[in-house]
Amino acid sequence: MFHQLYYILFYFICGLVTFVIFLSVTGKSTGIREQCANFLIAVFEWAASQAVDENEEDTPREDDENKDNGYPESTNEEELPPMPRKRRKISGDQPLISRQWSHAIENKLTSRPSESSLDGEEFQERSQKNSTVKVLVNDTIEFVTAGVESIIEDRVTNRFKAADLASWNFLSRNKDVYIYINWKLTLIWVLGIIIRYVFLFPVRLMLFVIAISLMLVSTAVIGLVPNPETRKKLNSTAMLMCFRIFSRAFSSIIRYHDKENKANGGGICVANHTSPIDVMILSCDNVYAMIGQKQGGFLGLLQRTLSRAEHHIWFERSEAKDRASVTKALQEHVNDPTKLPILIFPEGTCINNTSVMLFKKGSFEVASTIYPIAMRYDNRLGDAFWNSHITGYFLYLMSMMTSWAIICDVWYLPPVTRDEGESAIDFARRVKKMIAKKGGLIDLEWDGNLKRAFVSEKLKIEQKDAFYNYLTRTTSICTCKPPEEDEVSKWRHRDQDDELG
Image (cartoon, rainbow, N blue to C red):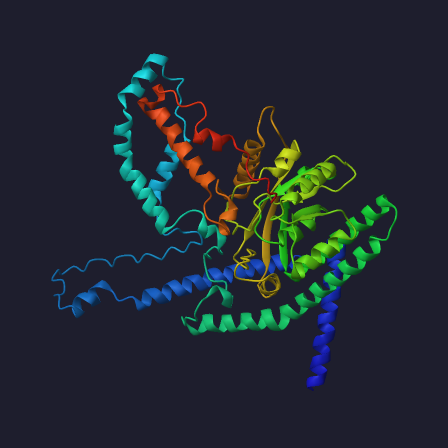
């Protein structure tokens, strides 16, 4: 009996895997994943309301507390209507504090009031009226309060850990401890474990192994083809097929928007970075050459495999000599229209998909035209963010394969050309702002490498520079001519690090 069930299950899984591979190769979809995702989201929302109701039932009423505390009951003959109970607001990105003073200080330091409405005499009179000491005294409380807010919760370090969920998605890794609410939610949680680990995981693991095997074999064979044009066509077909099978191993639901802006040949594509599977998400719709840091382990194996059939650029961040060679190789790649568009993540590290952080300027120095791509994950069915300080790459892949699904929206933005006289830094900031706006993400000017290092002296000097500029706009200090070459201007005009993200 058990042997028969085993064979039935085995043949069913093999048939399902074959069918999924067929859909992946042809680029088709039955729509079942989307329907299941909508059903699961509805279940999670219902479960969140159940949790709120249970908490409300456990909370004693105010009149019961009055009785227990010995307070007399109301003597009014007409009973007052019961106060409506407020449901607990559940938000996945709810900060601990409002940070109103931090935003106020930031606006002060970055905003530039219009001087066109004031003539020269009026502006000079206004500047002389506000002494530097007066402004410093008036702003002291705001600066101190903003500093305390940053100590409680800053805008940077919480971008390096997984974002909170709006409601629990019944994944055990999202709960530190098991909390019993009611038997219905417990039953759903147990059923979810059985579905994900007993039924979905074996199918996904088989798809993953097949995709890896196909990639290893196909790149080895394609690398032997002598004709460059034929090798390029074969590589494009093989990569699309392999990465689409990879995406089915995570039950990925990917929605591509504005495909007419997609880069077809040559050029540099830049995107915000959340996870190593960003490459997989984008490579299901287009074929790219890649640039990035050399990795070890399983991720290093993938890098070496990809390099067999196509030209990719891998480098060591710690090696200064690699920077010049990478810049030269990148320039040669961009100038060759026969090569694939190169995909770069200028942030240089994984961010939890709530914001876009500082873009390195290296790729914006090489190319005058950039193809921006905005990516936004929906973490309700599974969080794609990779915290490399906590989880290794293989365990990260296993967690992805035991999640419900990976949902991602991809927007291809129109190509952006560098303006005449625009610096690479300003060009990078302009592109970053466009990506953040399109993806609905927060635009931050902080370096993502703060995940691994302390705040550099250069960033401190930039803050001092911003404060000095604020004083020149609002106080009589603007009548004083600053030194032509002081410490601030030295740091301000010094080139940024040439690291490539």
